[in-house]
Structures are given as structure tokens and as C-alpha cells.
Image (tube, helix red, strand yellow):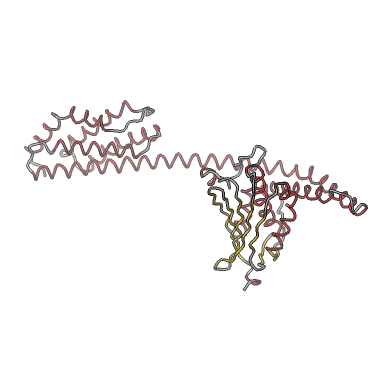
Length: 379
């Protein structure tokens, strides 16, 4: 332990250098102009200095209690100031460095100096531990509260959406079914009449959009029974279905498909995912790519009996901040978008024990779908 004489020398020395120490510290610390507590930073420094003056007269428990109270107060100030915790740690470390520089000029014996520095180190280390822990706990609490609010808001909106779609579907699908029926009658009576195929395709796309809401509201499952189906055949059907849009935008489709593979699941739901992702690519290329718009569809087998479908386009890069949120409900950058398409797609793929991801770089965006194969058909 530090002798009584050494302790007295240390206290007298620190008190004599208090203003010089605090002023030098004040010049080196990082203070944000917007920090609402910037005028209290020096007061906090003085509070820490007072604790240091008493480190040899308190037990470790008493010292910890004092440090914990001061750390909790400052941590809450840092949280409310919304300041980078790194700035705070730097400021505390600067104070420790300046204190060491001052101590090196004292007339303490080497052993006394070592004991003083060990105790000061303990004090600063514990203070930083308490402060950063309190700061992290408070930040996590805020994040949890925000997440809960977002989840509650989404849940309320989804519930309302479910109630709306349950009435919407009956009011809308009945006349839609009638229109499709009459189109078939006209086809049978006038098989050479132009544009009937285009009208039928447009009605199918309208029906597809309605299906997105139906799946999200969980009022109706699109594919009510699982079946084994050919992935390649389905991709061809999807491209035929989207042909008017492909033709309109003059998109070049490049396909690299594996030997025919079969998938076991809800065929209509997987078809919906493929239509949605390819149609989104067409839409993007139609708006942003003036020359040589290309969509590449690649399909290959990966180990452990999975198939991967990559649907890429040479449109603009999706901003990094959007790449993390494009699969969330109600996120959209389209003026008339619902923000449900990709959310529904991921729900469907995950229900099939698969994974849907997106990677986007300059002039290339790829949506990757990984699905389990129908093992009985592909060994």
C-alpha cells in the first residue's frame, strides 16, 4: 500500500496541478457542437478527479459504487446526446494519459509511483467498463423498444390488410372470373380475333397481384396441395406468361438451365415467386436501361440435394441501404408499389425450406433462390 507520506504527497501534488490537468484535458477531448451536455463534460471530469483523490481511502467496493454512479450518469448523457461512444472512450483515455504525464513529474518514489498507477488504472478501467456497459444496455433497450413498435405497427397493418382483402377478393374476383369466362367464349366463336391472348395475359397478371394480397392476409393459400413439378417447365411457362412485357421492353432473356429437375411443393406459389422477381427485373430495365437490357436465368445443382436459381439483370445497382430492407413488408421505391411483392416471395421460399437472397453491384443485380430438390426424383 502507498504510505501515508506518499499518499499525502500524491494528493497535494494532484491538487496543485488540478487546473492545469483539467485545462489540458479540455483542449484534447472531442466535443460535438450539437452535444446538449457539452457544458457538463468538464464537470464530469472534475467528478472523476474527486474520485481519484480518494482512491486510497476507499475500499474497492466503495470505489466501485462511486464509479458506477458516475458512469451511469455519463452513459445516459451520451445516449441522449446520440454521440459515438468511441469519442467518449477517447476522452477518458486522454484524461488517463495526461494524468500519467503529470505523475511522471512528481517526486514520488518508484514503488509509490507504481502503486499509484496501478490504482489509477483500476479506477479508469472500472469506470470505462461501467460506462460502456450502461451505454450499451440503454442503446439496446431503445433498439428493442423501436423494434417492438415497428413489429406492432406492421402487425396492425397486416391485420387491417387481411380484413380488407377478405372483402376485396369477393368483390373483385367474381367479375374477374366472369370476364375471363367471356374471353374464352369469344375465343371459341372468333378464334382469329386479335388481342384476345394479350387480354387473357393481362387478366392473369391482375389475378397474380390479387394473389399476393391473399397470401399475405393468409385468408387463402394459392397452392392448396403440394405436387412434384418440373422447374424448367415452370420457368418456360412463366416466360410465356410475361412475354408481352418482355417484348414491350425488348429484354433479351439468357437461360442456362440444368437438366430437368423436379421440386416438391406448392407449384402456384413458386410460380408466383418466379413471376414476381422476373417481372420486377423487366420493370426496372424498362425504366432505367435504355440499351441492351438483359435478364439471365441460371439454374444449377448444389451439394446436399438443393437447386439454385439465379435471376440477374443488368439494371442499376440497388442502393446498399435498401438491400437490407427490400424484403420487409411495405418497403417500396415505386410510386404505386405496395411493398409486398418481395416480402411475400421470401415468405413462400422460406415456407418451402429454402432461402431467397439478393446481391447488387454496379450494373448487375441477382436474386438467388435455393430450394430443396424432390429427392425421390433426382438421385
